[in-house]
Length: 269
Image (cartoon, rainbow, N blue to C red):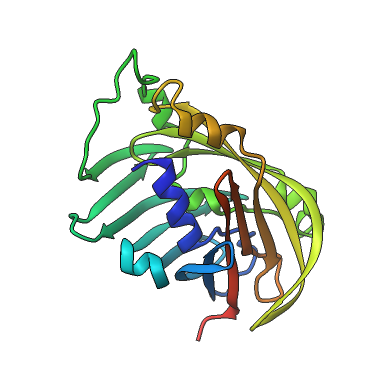
């Protein structure tokens, strides 16, 4: 599944950041309205359940408004794993997308011994990602990686959670089933934000996409994404703890700006 589709799913499913520092299980819920400019194009809901040793993320999203009429689609994801100190170790990952008049596409990954152990792809259009048109994807690119959803989980210590640069300044090695890339976050500022369930500060992090392997050489979209400095994730503390989750997402493009604005951010009902 391409990074572009992963990006759309990310907008629909949300980005997740957590310190996983508490002993008792907690269940958090976020609801987003996804907009292009001022026009709503989708809605999303996701739940995060975590304790000191494990985590799971489930979510879904769908198009709305004019986009629903022109090109309806739905998406869902499930990711789960364990925590080793302040690092996450994914075990399972599933993302699926269904567009009108097309078969459902899905990516299922399994992990073992700090590497991808199984890949199951169901894609409507498969490409032979081989040289010289593509950057070769090697076995080494499947080691010491996390899936696209778990990569958005950022374990921090209680002390680091007090500082925006400690929470934001991260770089995640990602494997999505077809391509290997890094997602880099960099602290920008701290801003006030308010929605149902939360009122307070959020850390604003710039997001950068860094292609590594499996992508097409000199592809225009890849080059544009790699150069894009107009992507932000706003992280807010979850349930009054040293656990963070995105409360706002902004992705600027040459065609306009996508935003995921919160409708609810708080304890799951």
